[in-house]
Image 1 (cartoon, rainbow, N blue to C red):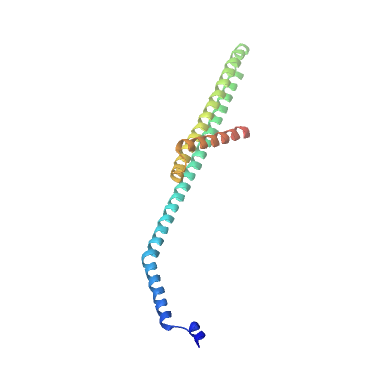
Image 2: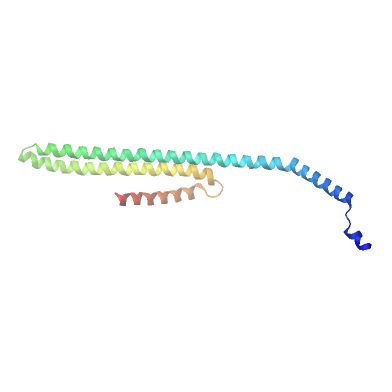
Length: 171
């Protein structure tokens, strides 16, 4: 009969263990479950806010890019217009005036090309600067504790320089 005592079920011990389990569950739920859920909700809200800010910055950058592309196209059209006007004026003059006008038209063409190139470079530099600023703000918000602003700017500048080089080879 002694071997049965080891295997026997003690009802009081089971009830006390269940009560201890219930009390422990209640304490954990009361003091840990709600604060942990609140902390997780706050973190999720912060992440959502950061993602929204990043999306907004990206949209602004795309709008700025479109704006500067349109500016570059209008500068090209204006340069073409200047070239056509100079060519028409030179075509209507007499032989002596034609030779003078050709020299003047060549100067105007060089100036128009250099002006157009200068405007194009200014526009590209403006786009690069705005992209760098927007990227720096975005990266500063997202990585403010991991990378300092100088390292970040140099990374963005090198990427944008490569983008500018790719655009030059396309055109």
